[in-house]
Amino acid sequence: MSMPESSSRIFGIRANLSQVLHQLLQVLLVGMTIGMMRNVVPALAETEFGVPRGSFMLLAAFVVAFGFVKGAMNFLAGRMAERMGRRHVLLLGWVAALPIPPLVYFAPSWGWIVFATILLGVNQGLTWSMTQTSKLDITRADQRGFVIGLNEFSGYLGVALAGILTGYAASLWGPRAGLLWFGIAVIGLATLLALVAVVETLPWARAEIKAHAAIQSIASFKPRYASVTRAEPSTGEMFALMTWRDRRMAALCQAGLVEKFVDALVWAFWPVYLHKQGLSLPAIGWVVGVYGFTWGVSQFFTGRMSDWFGRHYFNVAGMLICGLGVAAFPLGAGSLWWSISAAVTGLGMAMLYPNLSAAVADIAHPDWRASAIGIYRFWRDLGYGIGALGLGAAAALGGDIEYAFWFVAGSMILSGLALFHFGEETHPRLNPAP
Image (cartoon, rainbow, N blue to C red; front, side):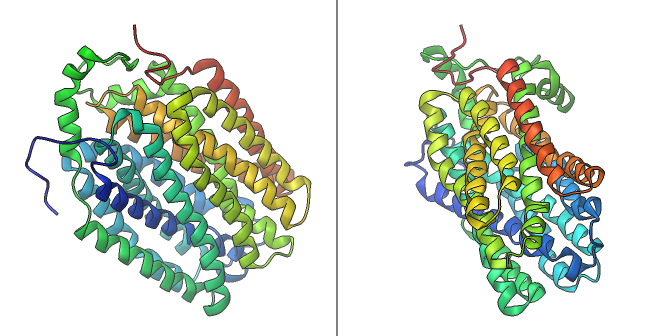
């Protein structure tokens, strides 16, 4: 579908409901694509793909690869989207995913799984970034938290559904065939819909930039935008701004990086831990699914609530609650205990996940918002790689998988305290610029 030529754009969820729904369906399928790799693959790493027992670092290798690749693609996706458009980047992401199901099906060794996960990182970095950026383009600033909450709700609902469905598919048809047909259906449908139903939203972003000066001259509440030296900052200037020069952005980026330690743990070690406790693949899918469902559904509310009450304290509380949920997981036994711990962890993630992104968007100027979100997402998803290395090392040095849980819980609590100290409220109504 070609880019609209009209310069007149109407912003808001209701005015652009059809495209918002199409983008939500896209991110649901994005979530299902990563979700198909988060239950069966790690649980059967030893028996199906030849990972030696107790090889914690090798087991974590595919999450490490995913994190570094996805982080890099997030960085590139923001810059690419400002030059070639959001829809083209989305399509490139789906093309990258097409080989994943056959790679898993024919995999003779764990190395093939790592390669498939590298392609998954490319897919996720390009597609998930674009679904979020596109919705921010076409909706209003006062809907930002709600929109990001909707985006992440849909995506992590897809992650949870895929984890459960692939568990049943693996039990019915075998792990390789179940993942093959599930992956072909999800990725094929997403690619088709991106071709025929998704429109380019870059014209909305350009219209917002043109209207920005007039809007700000009469606005009651002006955002505290991070300072740049020119209207179109270079990649190097943007990286410095996000990483250390603006204290608020740096605090948000470190929190985003550390919170991905949790998801790396859930992906790489929760299925292995639960499998060793005697749970079946469908039962593992349901426990991990409680985490995903709680995270996904709660974001529907936590994003909107941050539009009313602010981002900062939601983010700090989410980091601390999430850390406590992770710490509780290995302290008890049984599906009920693990499900409650998963729900607490998911609730904490729901409080922080959309609102860290919304906070970045609050103080990123429309001229370079896509780049700011891309760099934030670079640091955030680099947390998969750094976290997987850390939890793998913790388990290896401690000699038990439970040490990975303590490493992640401690990191979350320390990061939350750093965010509390160095961050601030970014909502322009609650903390406007002078």
